[in-house]
Image 1 (tube, rainbow, N blue to C red):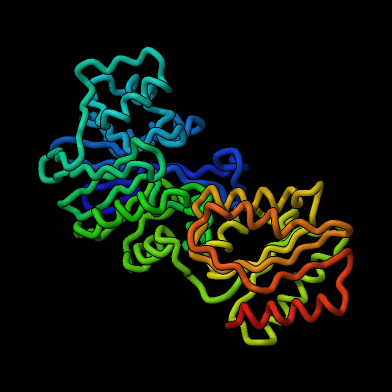
Image 2: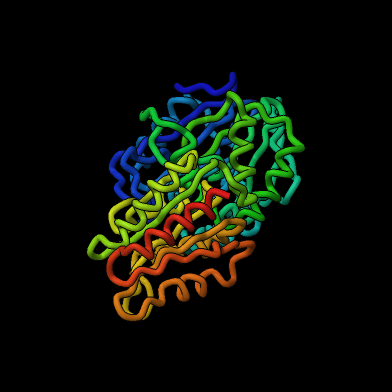
Length: 386
């Protein structure tokens, strides 16, 4: 049994069957669905797991409970990777009170038609407390982080924050990998649009004495919590995390790729601390989105395509703008054999984005890179290095 504190146990599962998380995110190292139990005079279970792991999860729970039965199931988030086994849980433990907020129960009725909890429904409000005996639970609402019903639970006895999807990451718990890389890709892919809401809940969290964070995905965080909280503050305020620059390109016959690589080489020659570069047609889109948010400067290199821009680039820019991309400097390399209009299209796609600074230099290629383009690439590199 995996003990977190004397009274708190981990009963989650690792999923190595999954190929795409939420139907779109590549997860080569699988996914963890976390669930927890507090054993006290009364017993509280925190969230269920994905539908494919019912028996394993109920077995994990039974191992911790022994002959006892749970008093409460705390439902912090209704996404099916956490809520799918609510009905299975109720069938196994019909006398347990189901704890949620008004929006939780509305969603529950959407997912489970005809579910009538009767007297076993315990609706809580922001700031409500629930005593388990020696442990006191405090409910901290976190709307739109990243669904409207989300709430965190703070155990003031062991100083543990059960943080729902916040501070989560891709990857199963039986795989050793860097936290920040997959937490960043997870954050910007799934939560990135809701920076204002994350900032609001971080302010609430700042008032709590937190010694352990128990998220619904990824490892339990105990050491150096300031590091994780600091990254979340940077990400949710759309700040710059790392010095450097990201070049995102699409290329049909290799000419735009050549220009993008020439710019990379020029920037490195001039001392740029880091230049990340990605071919959007061939590399993971979520990683490219992550890199666009990680650095303070972005270069978009693409072809004009059907009087628009190349489809993978269009997808990329829509991913950025839908996540409130802001506070960045952007340069453009456009290509067009007879009527280059990519730069105009790109600027139009960002027109509702906040605090975007465009470089004065735009590199315009007509088919192949020529001497005038080399001079433009040099000028763009100089401008980006300022």
